[in-house]
Amino acid sequence: MTVLDAILPLFVLLGLGWLLARRAVLDDAGIRGLSAFIFKITIPALLIRAIAEEPLPTGTDLTLVVAYFGASLAIYALAALIGRTFFDLDLAQAGMMALMAVFSNVVVIGIPLMDALFGAEGLRPLLILITFHSAVLLPLTTALVVWGKRDGDESLVSSMFDVLKNPLVAAILIAGVIAATGITLPPLVDEVLAYLAAAAVPGALVALGATLATLETGGERGNVGERGNVTVLIGLKLFLHPLVVFLCVGVLADLPPIYVTVATLTAALPVGVNGFLFAQHYGVWVRRAANAVLITTVLSLLTLPFLMTWLTG
Image (cartoon, rainbow, N blue to C red):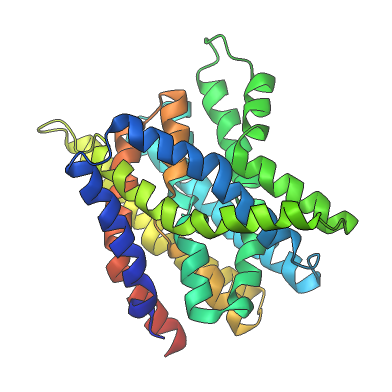
């Protein structure tokens, strides 16, 4: 299967969601309901089943985590510095820009893409990265955003508890406990989770497409700074992030080819819609976050096949 064969069905489902929203088959209430069901119920079910069934990380797996997130945090710091220095962003805005530069759509696009391309061999390193993805990036950004908005009523501690209540983070923690303790889920629970997990990816892609159709994108006429800010972010996310991950995972850590390929493709995935929802929750950098999700999702249809061809050529 070629990378285009793997990607095109995903974008067809995205397009279906976009069309349903544009034709008002899914109105705002319907999109909110579908999105809530997918992101609070079915994706957590998918994560619990997928991660809990994986063996605990080995030495190679932990090296992957250190190399990938070492690279990601370097890009995170660079993005925050660029935002503060060149675009005059405050700390909260710079933290949100940094999150968008490294927060990949690992579940909705990453899981079906790696499964289609590599099967179980490619899913294992991806699931290892997913386990740490939100746990590393969301609390760090929460700290920056809350510190940057420290005149508000919300405390840093309460915000950290909000992160732990995120359904994806909670699902990862539950799956980690199940994997570490060797607990076997009752057959009925496992079967219900399996039904929910089967709906996660197609439902999430439709929900994402519908959400993208309703996002407030674009900048004010003549707002060169805002457009430049988003352009720099896109370059960091789709080009520099995968390059630095490739160097860290493939050259410095010298991990097996499948780990290098999956890690690099993961870094090259478009910005995850959860990044936009995070920005919307805090009311920080919302329009630029919407632009980042929409534009990187469209551009990845071109960049991912090119990258896959380069990695396997």
